[in-house]
Image (cartoon, rainbow, N blue to C red; front, side, top):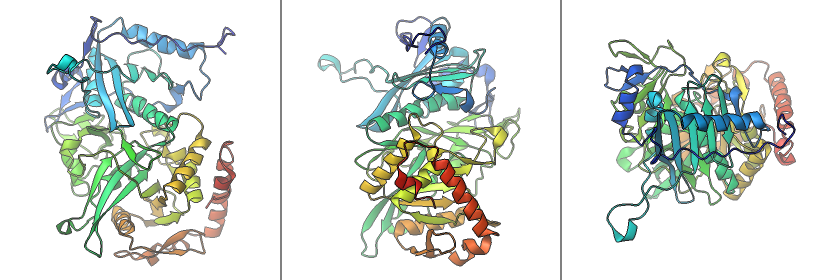
Length: 516
């Protein structure tokens, strides 16, 4: 109900026509967008543009959607106001296609004020241009581009910070934030929501294809998904080559870094076909050579990275924020494949930083659904900078879920069972005081893909853990040997986990009872 006592109704959110509206510049070139933002740019030593935003992370606490948050007349008015203000000022309008999958692809339209063209510049590099319709009347030229499925208006200089989402209408208004991540997630949020409406599940996950040589000399493919919050190793592991035998025809390729959709037929639809939006703090040329090469290419767009007046870039500095970012193009990332969709997924990894968890544990479908619901990780600067480093639970490690979270867990268990997925929880942090580094995680991922890991039931934790892994001393990562007061800590952890799962009324009891 609205404040006046009547039922609040969605606004008329017809955007200004990009062709007829005189105040709208439609699909300007990257050069033109950069020109519009010249007053905000520092040019890096690589020739790429760098910008510093006023807002330096998403505003999760200022975001409401009409499905979950009980929109009232004031909320709808904010959306109406955004479109009305966009019609009365100089704007740029950029259309891009999100996804390539024949059953899950959408045309997206972003409006931003011309003086904030840098937001459109960075956002446009993530997605692919929209092709026009088939040639008209047998001619050579394509017809007009299709109408957008999703529309976002972003007005960074609005007095109030507020993000309002109409999921069923495909409309988002971003007020008071100049952070590029708000534009990006406004569309990816809907990509995931619409996957659920189609019987699938949107995932905040990276996707990867691994090609292997079998003992019989035949090639095999393994599809992997990595679910994790930003800054927990998701991008690093998704992009890693796994130190495979390239001479034998083996390779690992990153398909998606951030958001994809697990569809009912087992295929995984990618969303970002042209670029990635990655964290840059601590970026190291030796540890992450592929990412470093792409970030230091002139085609990248940097945001909130420490860049000196002479263009020198310091990736180790958090001068502006620990949430420094770069938009990079897939064409300049050697680990990125040409494809963005997986034909089928075989293995799902939930990335955690829980210090009492082993480096990896294998989960049943019910345990995996519980792990999905627990979403245990650590808070990062991308979410709430004031709480960075604190323990956190986010369903599906996905802060962008629209609709019932319990139904998401039920859907995951249903898909994991029907598709016969192998699911794991992967600790990329510390076990007690022992570091679980990239080398250990990569070794586990490679050998799990190869099927060379032997598994056993661990009496101390009740989990299914490796008893033998080629190239890894598993005994050194025994939980009981590394964690003090293990029984007490596990009892407390399980009680907290059960209490957390009990907050989701729609969640199936079999999943609640599978707490590990």
